[in-house]
Amino acid sequence: PEAQLLTGKKVVVTAGGTIERIDPVRYITNDSSGKMGFAIAGIAQELGAEVTLIMGNTQVSPPANVQVIRVQSADEMYDAVLSQWDEADIVVKAAAVADYRPKEVYKEKMKKTGDTLSLELIKNIDILETLGKQKTHQFLIGFAAETNDIERYAREKLERKNCDLIVANDVTRAGVGFGTDTNAVNIYDREGLVEELQVMAKEDVARQLLSIAAERIAGGN
Ligand code: PMT
Picture 1 (cartoon, protein in one colour):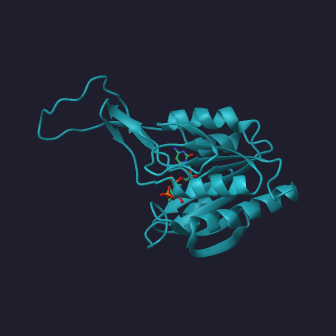
Picture 2 (spheres, rainbow, N blue to C red):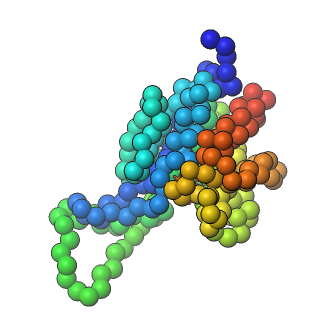
């Protein structure tokens, strides 16, 4: 078969929200459906890559024929990504990872007691930032879900997490971000804006993003 854009490349994609347990029947999560990451995994496979999809909590089915690792918590997601890290050429972090988790995970269902209840949360590992520190040959793509000062926050995350590209979505806009079949994003590198994509199918966002990544890998970044 003819070589495609990502033939011979290994692409690792994270998708969906993490689940942070409170007790055996309760947890904290977020609105990520996994669709953005699934689109990236599916298109990467279409473009000839060997793909591993690491997925958290979602109600949506992942693309057929993609190798999947299912995880719950941020800690589990981190372990799964690390297991694929050495061989990865491109790592795309589309997952919505919980920044905090309950400090204590109750072994038994919590009982209803007082009129108020406080849960103490502690910080989760920042997977992307940790990967950014140990990056060797990997091309690292982060996402930034923002509601305000999009460019400033996205570029600050790009720097802090040592990404090669960051994909910023304004999740207050209709048809953008969590749960929808479409997205609109600005893609930044260290120098600034690389591409501005209007509202379009998440598969089309994926195609544009992966072609930028493929071009940069071929050019030695
Ligand atoms: O799943 P969908 O319903 O299709 O929605 C898509 C999406 C809105 C979830 C997706 O487009 C998106 O923006 N994903 C990133 C969401 C997010 O958590 O963004 P953030 O700005 O909080 O995090 C920035 C980056 O750091 C992300 O790549 C995130 O995966 C990563 N991160 C964050 C926290 C943490 N503890 N570890 C991380 O690796």
